[in-house]
Image (cartoon, rainbow, N blue to C red; front, side, top):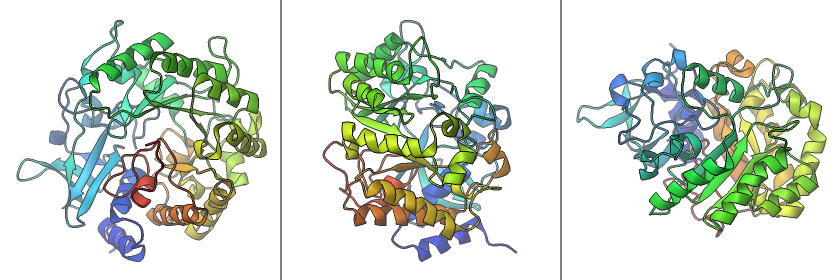
Length: 441
């Protein structure tokens, strides 16, 4: 009989004591998803639980038609785990639905929610409260959740102002990305899912958040969407995304930390982002290995190329300062069959090479834990994602490399440390020491 998932998790906790056990559980949930008992779903978008907003990708292990009750009755945006046999400190986890996951959220004997693994209760589950600002609509009738959803337990306003990507089709789309499919599935389901959000409706949504977020939980906003290779509304990428920042900073000067996730653009475009009021730039490099970048990011390779992409990232540090350039990579795709590394050792060595390249220059990448969405080529071929050991060793390597180069955690991510972190789509902030972040947060 094979090892249970519990055995695998506990083995890794024992082998890597420097990685918080909260991060081991969180990475396993992010890479493999969570099942929900029907009675654990609220089913009421006007109720007391903040629902999953599908803010850019599906981050699910099935299409909406395959998710059953979890599609009809939305699961929560995130959950928070505490207690249980591993004595978990407060751990915020983005919800990725997988009806076949060995992790299941259900109602316990005392009526509260719990997380089960292999049928055993391992944590208490808390749900994000419906924020007051979600209960209000814009003058055009759209919901704040559709225009300006918040994630990371309310810390980050996520402004996906362009819902599709102009890297389109098999020869251009990144092989792990389902932004275009996610757009199509929401439209097919008849859900509101605005293609291009107007500057005015973004400002109206932020007005509502600013008015009703009296505790000041929201601290940052991210402007993002699909890559623009030609034009949208007559504008290139820097001006299209930058005009939102300009309008936000004029209306709400200094209220939030302004971030943009965009391509690695030429220096003059990056300067325009800065001039528009953006303070943090995320030119994501996706995967470090040259061969894998060329295979997995064919559009980016064709239009820009890996070497030029990296050159532009380094150039952007001259404008924003190295600390404020935070490129993302998709942790786990390094090991995706058929082209990826076949051993954890090789994958970690490659990823560490990329971390050292950037961190030695004062640039601190961050990462999202790969969710193998089934409508993507890599997700379809690798439904289990990367091995959990890869993700745990990456956390250890990431922290060690940061410490070697004397870096603090990147700004715009809230507090660091197990029990304090709110960044929900990977455990890198949970795994760093408490108080490692700078003054910006």
